Image 1: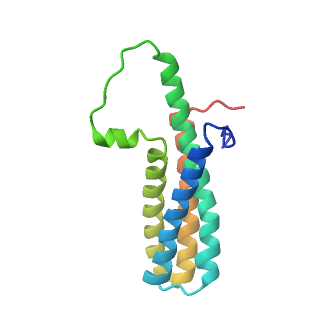
Image 2: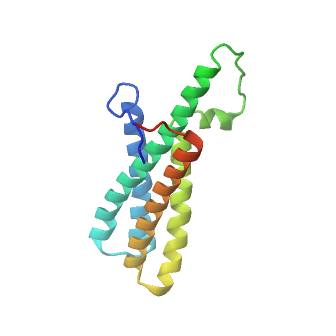
Image 3: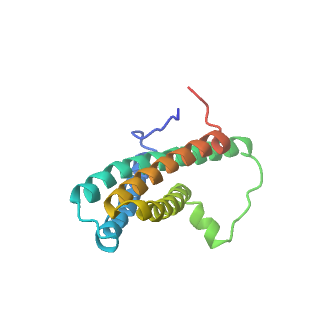
Length: 159
């Protein structure tokens, strides 16, 4: 996934912190689900694994964000002198916020893969191992989806 992310520049540092915080909040909910609903008693599994998964889904959301940002920059360069259209839809205004699309994509993909793989693996394994498999599988699929979006939608220039 060769992508150019400007994390430390003044333009993207705030967005990077917002994405990291939201990815942490998403994983906090999975920690609560793991401890209280799925009855996982191993604290190493419930605390250490979600820290790594937070980093993985943060990286996936940054890749998706950069893909959308590059497409937006390309559209702005091509349509500088065209008449602007006004968007009245509230949903469209929410999705125009820079971190909404990447987080929505990551959250939907991770939730779907996590719960489906957890319940499939819970048939054969105990809850702790099922939680480990579901978290890792969800993060891997999120990274693959981010790579797919980067290659097909963003067409990020390679350096």
